[in-house]
Image: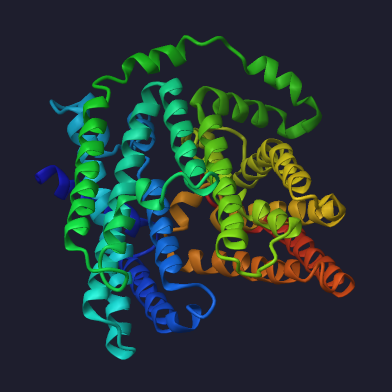
Length: 488
């Protein structure tokens, strides 16, 4: 318990260091306000999407959110490997103190469960309760919805915890677990072999209670199943935590010197040659490539499944097409920039004749090298699968422009520390504006490409031209914003 308190204090101090205590408190207030507005407009949404489908998709989103924040195995290992730096985390202390990694990893996991429940889900529940007093909604229904969301989150974060711990020790086992999970999704969404409750038992709990049912026995069984899964996944993850990370560090030291070969490959980059070579060596030795691919492919797969489900399962005439997919791929790609800035600490650059803007530009080049081929292949695949190759001439420019615009925007706002600065509500608000506005414009315009091709295509081209102009402006302003800042 004392360890958990210390870790909660450590997490709070870390987030406050990104902005301030006042801005930190602004995050749950913002979540609360959004929840109130969305809850008040729920009756209008139900005219398009049924309440059952809406609650199911909401819990699926909370489940995926739990998966995204539950990669404790990967994050904890990164903290341990970087413990020689000037800032150490409590999770890395077993290397210096008579503590076990299993206890610190468990503390880190419980810290994140409490932290995200209090910071995100808690305010959202308060917003729903506030709206329920105005609309009004049934108190029993609101309680069951809130309980189900907590269960979905706990199931997702514990599943991610155990998969990330096992994946940090054995890549083959990690690949098997990921493939098995994707197979479960295909069995539900593609083959209709079972319902969502077979993947997410909290959905079975929800559908057995008001406003969908009144079967307390079935609800209790799904509740017990979800809690047992949470405890079981957590216990298995703790048991699988390695008690020594020194062996992996020695293996990395013993690897062959590969920098000269990479240095030759990037001769065309001129003044960026050495930095790019060094960054790609870090990328290979850190094992970040696999994590990046999973981070990029998983949302795209979920996007494809969601749009298919909306068009075929819900029969909602939205009209998703290749241009929409291309825009979404471009916007999703920005997540990879955070991985590129998190491969290694950058403090040592302080001793070298290198500026922060130059390193940022090098990472932007890496981003383009790594994502352009994968993004293009995905859009081409969607074009052939949906028989929409006629839209490739428009979809590919949308893909390339949105990709470059998004990564330049986040690099301008956050520099080399997107994982830190995006917790600053001011930076997060600016990023939301620069990303959501063009995203909404391109999404709306993509729906009318077939209905009114001339006008919608002209409008899309105008939007792309505007995004390119903003991209060049932000690139020119990188030096002005980041030249006087240090790497640490």
